[in-house]
Image (cartoon, rainbow, N blue to C red; front, side, top):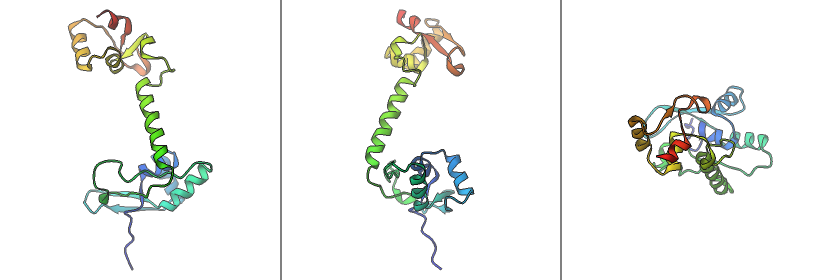
Length: 172
């Protein structure tokens, strides 16, 4: 009996992105028998990883998002050779989806998605936001905090984040 070739099967992260669910949900789908799962040892070595059958992934994607175009992560996600990891053939429309996803992530990272308020209008800024707002480096801002030129307010931001007052930053 020939050994199955799992090199074209999808990794857990690829499946989660393709279907639009979390990796925990992918595990639940496999446990429920909705996805065929196998353990695969990469030819280059390393630990065994869970891989999932591409047709099962496509079936679930269509069931969950009937109007969506097919999407599978491209093989060239990073610069390493693709022979040592599970990959899938690109489906039509994947390039457009990746570009839209990258743009959305960039916008989310820039604004931190805090009620759509621009940095210049926020009263309090996290250190990374203060660096972006002022054009100074994070290390430079931390040095000013240590020297007493700026006051860091501990735990006053969303989810207990340390923040700086924008007005204090404008004065320095």
